[in-house]
Structures are given as C-alpha cells and as structure tokens.
Length: 176
Image (tube, rainbow, N blue to C red; front, side, top):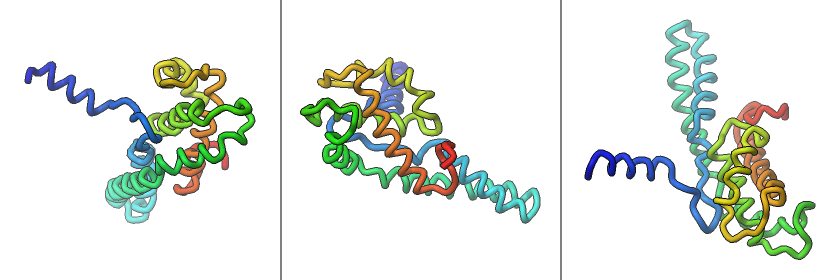
C-alpha cells in the first residue's frame, strides 16, 4: 500500500459515517468531557496532598473519568432508543398526524448520533451544521430540515438528559 492509500484507510476508520439501520453506536463517553471531568475531580482530591498530589490526582481522575464516560456510552442502547421513539413518536406535537415512524426515524437517529459526535456543545450551537448535513443524512425520509429538526432536537435532549442523570454535576450546563 502507498502512503496515500494508508492515509485514506486510516481516515475511513477514524471518521466513519453514521451506521444505517437501528440507531448507531454512541461514543458519548469517549470524548474530552468525560476525561476532563475526571481530571478535575482527581486534581481536586489530590490537592489535599499538595502539588504532587494534585498532578497524580488529575491523572488518576482522567483515567477514571474516561472509564465512567465509556460506561455511560455503553449504556445508550441504540435499539432501545429506536424502540422508545417508535412507541412515542406519534404523541409528539411536531409529528404530522398519520405519519409513519420511518419518516421520522432518520431524524431521531440523527439527534442521538449528533449528540454523541458533538459532546459538550448545545443543540443551538450545532444546529447550523446539522441543517447543512440533513439532506445527505436523511436517507429516504422526505422531511425537510424544518420538519426534522424538532425530532432531532427531541432525540438530542433525551440523550443529554440521560447523560446528565448518569454523571454528577451539570454536564450539559443547562442549570439543571
């Protein structure tokens, strides 16, 4: 393989597209937030032992934070998320009466996947990116972004709420 071919192969595996079918895997806990939160907690604990304790505590906390984050990410079950939305989508105020779940399914998947890929940012901050990429992501759905964004935001918020319940503090900085 040439260097260029190797680089292309690495890029494919480093940034894979969202998986088709059931809601994709969600690397929520693998991001900087989990590690940074753990580092901060470890540093605070280590401070009681002096400057060296602060450094050791930060390293230990970062490792623990990453492990905790991975457990949270593992707890987000794509099949369960899809089942939840399949059972509940028709009661949502933005859903067109009589619409099939498969029309909204890509928007729910997009919200869950987008939250995982843009950890630490608010929906409002990433909405322009989501809007830009919707037509490429929506598959067979005929929803425009104006119709899909409500379902996308709903799924985003559900995952955000789950993560916040599973982590100490105000992980999404919404004051709750």
